[in-house]
Figure 1 (cartoon, rainbow, N blue to C red):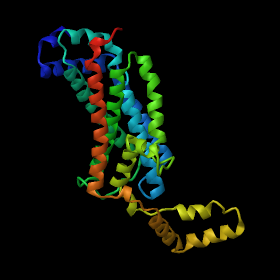
Figure 2 (cartoon, rainbow, N blue to C red; figure 1 turned 90 degrees about the horizontal axis):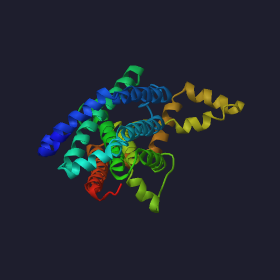
Figure 3 (cartoon, one colour; figure 1 turned 120 degrees about the horizontal axis):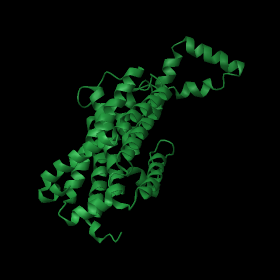
Figure 4 (cartoon, rainbow, N blue to C red; figure 1 turned 90 degrees about the vertical axis):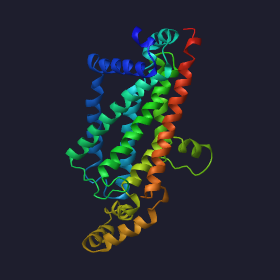
Length: 308
């Protein structure tokens, strides 16, 4: 990379971007793409074809899809910088612009995230998951959904890239990553609900929380029906009297009315299917990514102080 140090930032971005794509081909970094397809297929198999048909499935499915996006983003770049830290240090002293170096990584990762999102959506469609026909932002639900998944994946990628800029070794990076994943899982607001205290602040700072909200909003969560009330009765069908009630409910319009009544009680302004709400979620997720990559750049700018 001796040529890179004698060019400006744009020239360095071009040179390092070429290097990253050569690594993608020669060192088989493309293997992450089939893995994305496999994970998407697993989620599709678990959630089923009726992912977007009722509140319960949508909320659980949104959380699962967000977890896939975060997993992909983290694994994309958690080792990208720290594995060549010695090279970066040497070339930075010779004239490498850290902003150009990270800029090349950001462009490369943006493309990788886009490919992963496209693969995931293709898998969901081929599996038979029925997408809603209505779109809130762009006029196409698939496009709304794709943008949401890309923003989530790319922002998660930027968190991992920040860690890769800060830590000293790939071992340290892989040690930190499980803790990041746990934080995203616990503070998503799906498995555990938080109403007050520091946990609420942490929740508002997680991609998993805003990603789940964004997908629910894009799919218009509040317009769907809910099976919660009927399911609560159905689980006691081993009692003969309850089984008779279940049979009666299923033969009449009461089932539909129960689903509507249950849905009314479960509507949440947080999941409002409006353009403002969706754009707000996209903006918060993007902001998290911007803050993280800024911290990563500042950290890497001080690499000359590294005594290692």
